[in-house]
Amino acid sequence: MIELRAGSLRCELHPQLGGAVAGFWLDGQPVLRSTPAAQLTSARLAGSYPLVPFSNRIGRANLEWQGTQHPLVRNNGDEPHAIHGVGWQRAWGVLENDDTSALLAYEHRPDPSWPFAFDCSQTFRLSPQGLQMTLAMTNQSAQPAPAGLGWHPYFTKRPASHLRFAAAGRWEMGTDKLPTERKHSTGLDADAATLDVDHCFDGWDGLVELRDEVMLVRVRSELTRLVVFTNATRPFVAIEPVSHVNNAVHLFAAGVSAQQLGLHILHPGESMMAQMTIEVEAVR
Image (cartoon, rainbow, N blue to C red; front, side, top):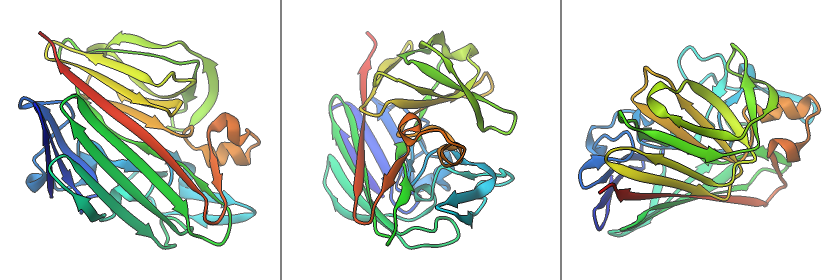
């Protein structure tokens, strides 16, 4: 377990539980849903975890790729789909760390959860202004493979939490939690306490602001898609920068272009990388 400190910010990582951020605090106040790393029992309960080699869901846990069907593990209880990739359920090794930074790595070999070999790394850099994270993966298989990256941070929702970001479109969700169609959207500018949303937005401009009575949080990324999830029963707002639309491999097989979906197809030895920064400042 790793603790990072910089100024008024503190972050605890749990490499063995999915390379997850167990907790992230500003002067003791949780920025993310936070549990001390020594008490964390599952990455699913962490403050944030990596999404690799895909984000969100692959419908019915069945990957159809280049004419071959690959049944995947249904990896989240009764959920009928494969969800959030494999990195969040695997142990990551620690390659480097000091008081303000850490480098983690995971090597994947083909298994029932994902049929293509890849390796990936995460870097964490904490400054007095915020936490910067980088996620990278390389296709180590002998054939082109679908690929995607992202993060699943759960931000603390307080009574005055207000969420704002700009986007161009929103993918509507069916009762099976899979996208059905894309509609025009300008994003969100709403009080989080009453918000009910579970959608992927595209055309995101790379900035989210979440403000409450305690702190102002800004999420920045060069990724252009954003999954947002919360409702009145949840004490958090999940704000997830991702590289591709939910269920992208099935939509691609149905004829939607990889470019529109944000789906990367990595050839053997090819890599992709993404960054996210969580900036935090106290509200005076």
